Image (cartoon, rainbow, N blue to C red; front, side, top):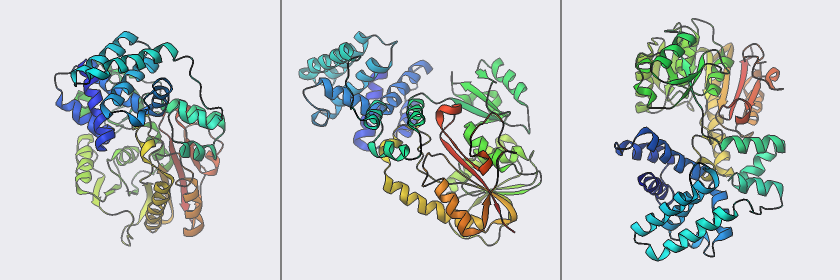
Length: 442
């Protein structure tokens, strides 16, 4: 009961107060120290699952309720949403439990007169859930079934086949996989895997990359002895691939110009075996503190945090390699942050493109003649990705360079030889991610 009530009030904060789901979820769970890890996982599933599938849930509620969602009291609506999520998506939850708990919550919050309404709608959904009619238009049906705004489905359909589009939507409906980057300065993959296993942490070594492991969250991984000894950091494999694309030689000077929270900086330093210099930059002091703390924990003395605005000209630094992991729309992170898709628009993307181009323009001057710049984003958005790369190469004297020698053979794409790759979540279980490698002419 308690978990459903907590999840309900988190959703109220998100929808009525504009809270960010990952922040309010973490904050709320931290205050409820009485909850077990299993209970916390259930709250997380209810919140994130409801958000991931919100459009479909509301569509189904509207099918079977005489009072439409836009006319409902917020408490009743979000109570129905959580109940409907359990009925539609959580097969292990008995229908009776989903319905009865929703009724109890309604009565507890003094909505006794609406408790019968809540029960009736949820019971009807349970009875009719296999007989729901969806729109005839294929793209509209996709938008409803997988809960995407129409504009985003249309935008993606312009650069994807229907099959890839549907698989992308399906994949984002799954909970995220947790991957970690092995600190090869201190240990190796097999040793770390064995150490984590000895701590009772479920770990999988059959991964996409040689320096990654998959873990299954059974408790707070930051409490692990291996974590505190600096043997790994948490990082999606897509982000690790951007460091593979960079592939800096030992003793190089590298600038990571949008570095916070520091994962790519750490992977770069590890790639060079803690030689050379990695300038790790951000515009906020408190984010630099995170980078400093992380580098210290990992024992990476080559990392040099710097307070700098990546969009402003820098006429002093010259680097062999520059990584521009630009601020972006984040549309590749929908498994982790499902509310992003409801909070973005095409005008937001257009505004971000201007910021990204300012950062690329400023970064061009940092790269030595003949040096390498890797541009990456955690989004699926041609305007922010390949369009920016083509613009940058034409304006600032850079050329795309094949990734064949840098990206592992297990990663397949017909654009790798052209110098860029768009990772889709269903392909390798990573975030949606874009990477391009460019060399400065001269």
